Structures are given as C-alpha cells and as structure tokens.
Image 1 (cartoon, one colour):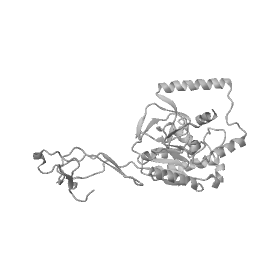
Image 2 (cartoon, helix red, strand yellow):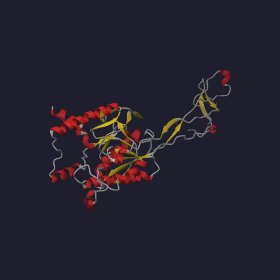
Image 3 (tube, helix red, strand yellow):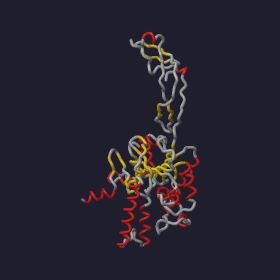
Image 4 (cartoon, helix red, strand yellow):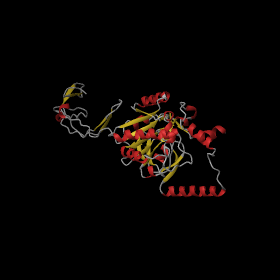
Length: 365
C-alpha cells in the first residue's frame, strides 16, 4: 500500500486525479497471508463515496477504490482462528518424517513434530497395568500402548495452549489436494464440535444425513457409530483435557477411545466426520501408496498367532439370524433419525480412492 495519505486514480481522460475520501468502513473482506504461521484479518468495505472536487457538477461517478489513508482506520474485526498441526513421529522413522514434511510443504501449512513413544525403548509397557475393560480378549500390544501414550502427549499440548482446536496426525497420513485450505484456519469448524474426524478407514460407519458446508468441496456430518483409525483428527482444547482425564487408566486402543460412541470416553462428545475425508493412511492407496505400512498391524498379527485364537469366531445359525435382525433394526432406526450408513470417500490426486475390499474384488474378476 502506498505510504502517501492520498490515493490516485485515473479520471475519464486518463489523467491522474487525487481523491479525498469521506467514508465509513465496515471491515468484512477476507485476507489470508500465505506464509507459515499465517494470519488473517477480515476487512470489509461498506458503500462509500470518494469524490474528486467538482465531481458532483460534472456528473462523474465516485471512484470505488479511491480513499484517503489518513482518514481511514483498517482494523481486524475477526482474527484468524489459528490451529496448530501436530505430527506424531518415531525418532527412527526419518523416512516418514520426510514424507510428512513434503506433504505439509505442498499444502503450505506449518506443523510441529511430536516425538512418538517407541515401544522398542519401553520394555516396561508390557508390565503396565491395564485396568479398563478391554474390547478384545487379548491385552493391548506394547505398540498400541505406546501409540495411545503418544496421542495423549499431543492432547496435553493442545490442552495447554490458547487455540480452541488442534489437529493431530500420524506420520503415515496422505492428504487430499485441498487439505491445506482447511488446516490453515479453524474458522470452518462448528462451534459445538469437540472432535472432527478427518480421515477415512474405508469401513462402514453411520453419519447424519444433514451436512454443514466446510468450504472447498468438503462438508461435515455428525458421526454416530464407530469409525476406527486415528491418523488424522481435530480436537478441541476441552475435549483434549477430557480425554487425558479419561485415559489415566488404559486398556483400549486410541482410535476406539476417540471414535467409538459406544464407549464412555467419546459417547458424550459432539463428533463430526469430514466428507470426503481430508486424509487416509498410506496403506489404503494400493498401487499409489508411498510405502508406509502400518507399524501396529504386524505386532497385532504376531500376538493373535501366539495366542492360538482365531481372529474371527464362527457364528452359529442362531447368531447369524440375530446379527441380521439387529442390522436391519439399526438401519430402520437410522432411517427414522435421518442417519445413513456410509463408507467415507477420499480423493487423492484427482481420483476417488475405492475401498480396499472393492479393489480386491475387482482385481479378482
């Protein structure tokens, strides 16, 4: 902006014509600074007159952009709703850190690395008492305990800061092309939201039919059924405090702690699902994958194999009938409550990613 207290514009004959501006400013247009740690001010301009002397006599219309800077005061009426992005990363996983650094550079958003707790360095985790009733007959693996404690460390960071929300990501996340626009500013998040799930695990879940626009082609719907995965989510400062208190005793995987409405840790929370998803885990990209396999799956598989227990129990005929009846009853109830069962989609590099089981079925044909 010129340092002079006067602006100049061209008159009808192409000559420079200085203007003074008797105006009133109602600050409302949005300015986003594309820099790390970006800030925004909202400026809006009400109708104003900026007339050249004698304009009324000549019938010349007021110039819409001319103004006297000395008589105007630009004030930020609505500050940027900042939101820090935290990335959980093991010290030994430098390849994953490089991947996430590249993703955030592409999005034009800054992030903070949070050193993950490494189960390899914590043999004591196998002796940690798990007092919470478990969802599985097997104890949490050391890697699952370390994962929960790493997320808990992020919750503590969010809870201690002044920002209303913080975004938390695991280091195997891949992002939609439009992700940067939503991560740069938390202004699109509903005021009542405790948690916003940003990822998809390509499993059926239940969301509200009613959608709230988040801008840039995304929308938000209330999440009403378990949707596992904790590779990307936004959490409010108060919800972070609540989850810290709720996980003093552990025994449940972190994704169930956050995104299973059937559990006390999340049943009282207002949780939204972003549609389409902002991110997903690299393992779901198939031939487009970067090559970042889950670090938890192998240990889980080894634990199941060592236990000698089948991963899935065979259902009797009566149990199958009961399961089908419950499923139909749930569908009817969801329909009456304006809810829908849905696999949350994800767009990657201009292409809609299909659910893994669908890809396998198509490849078998």
